[in-house]
Image 1 (tube, rainbow, N blue to C red):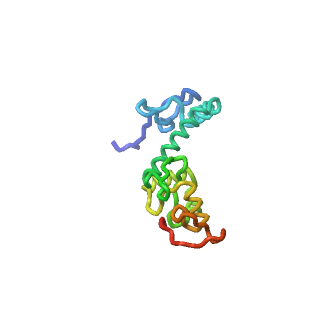
Image 2 (spheres, helix red, strand yellow):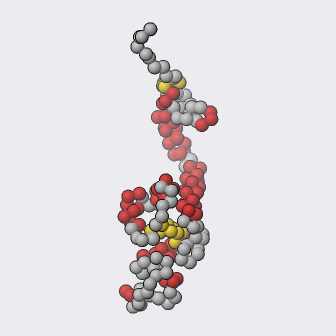
Length: 166
């Protein structure tokens, strides 16, 4: 009546190493159930496949990266808030009130930044700028020359003005 309870776990034999392992040692194969290889053998097989033919893996990674960047850009308006450029190749995320360098040091840059933005539900304080406007904003001290034609920064002999996009 009150004997010790034993837990029972189903097992499976790995198709590669031929060892019997618990189901928890096999990655999920989606609707097909469990993978044929245990987790450690699966990693070895994937590395071998990648080494033999990296092109499809890199193509998929580029597609996923572009999708993630597009989601981030769309969340912040999809075009440069200064000049209106909307080609994603030319667009970047700008920290409106500065601090981008420090933020990138904590979360990473590029893909890591886009992933962080998505995981944090695209927080306020950021905007889309094209690379030209973003760089000009940095060089001129927080403003893009599009907002005042023929303006040059003080270091280049120009004057200062109040920025219209800050």
